[in-house]
Image 1: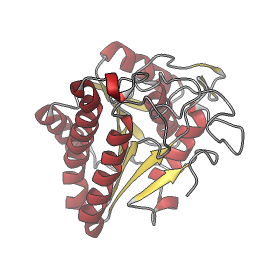
Image 2: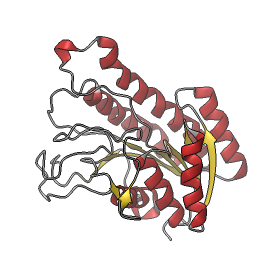
Image 3: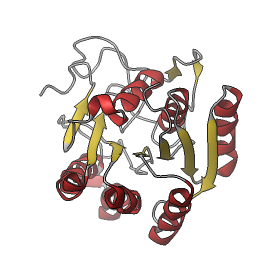
Image 4: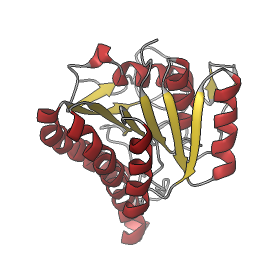
Length: 265
């Protein structure tokens, strides 16, 4: 088990990506703390984890409320060291409207939410991680393609990348890694069970034929996919497991690109 005896907090754990990552972390031996806005959805994820022999706890947390995020992280750390922080929260972006027709407030909203949410969770978890000299902070980010009508999404993703680099630079000397994951979108099925998983959940609705937002639904074979294959939610979760494990201990301040060639480095 790659994450045996680890403790992970997954923010946005009720969504398609967050729930898949939480279940994969539990499968690999981690105790998982599920944080999100809707307790009933989180309880459903926790029940699946427990049914498969894992350990999961649920907390209703608003990632935009810094004090609430810190109280939750302090509570988790009081019981066990926080080893992994994974942020799969949505940016509440508005897609499909050209910038010429978009109110500035709608453009700015995903930027503000993305930066606020990740700053809050990374600092809350990072405070405990840096104090003991190890930990991993991960976030779902988005692409660098030139795609029209994505509103403030590209600016939000660029801001997340910049924030992650700065966090990595400041936390790195204390043994804490920070990276962001780049997916081309997922087709809406989870290969843990072959069934639709989280359709329409936060961060999963995307415009067909675009790279979409983190973990979004897209049309197979679009946007220059060299492999012709979109990663399932389970495959995204497996990459999140690798990124959180000691196998990736030298990866930090880096984008983990599994876009199948849609974004070429």
